[in-house]
Image (cartoon, rainbow, N blue to C red):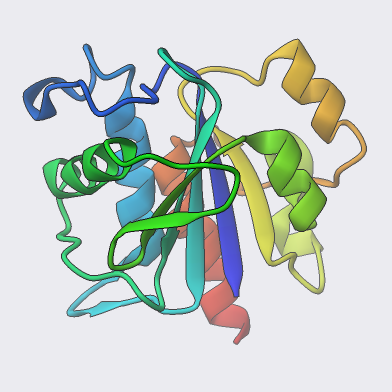
Length: 188
């Protein structure tokens, strides 16, 4: 199983946002929706061996984590609004410290980066890291940030993790995910 953890620094933690304004009123949730789609969509198929974690840090109740399982996901279409709608539905259900399913393959719980680091081993995708093509074997789990840099608190949590670069240019989070998955496909 491959896992991608994307931190949404301003992404809302309640489903009170408009699907027509994912970039603005929804705290750049559009970045996270594109990342979700990049994790799963192939031409006429889905990646079933991927999980995507979205750590939401916006108001009103941060942190919350949404997990999307490629093995179980249904009703996800390859557009931002579809992913946004399923995220909104997940944020509208009560949750605790264990994942609760909102729709098939979408789960939500309280907690964030700290809890996920206790559960899985991650590498950090960082433009200054070691090039992915110089690493063997490839890690299975990766952390990315949205359009913002990691905070000081996040940097402290990830400081000892391996830093890996997707290539010589700085890419958007969703493009980075596709690049990493492509490299993994080539090696398999």
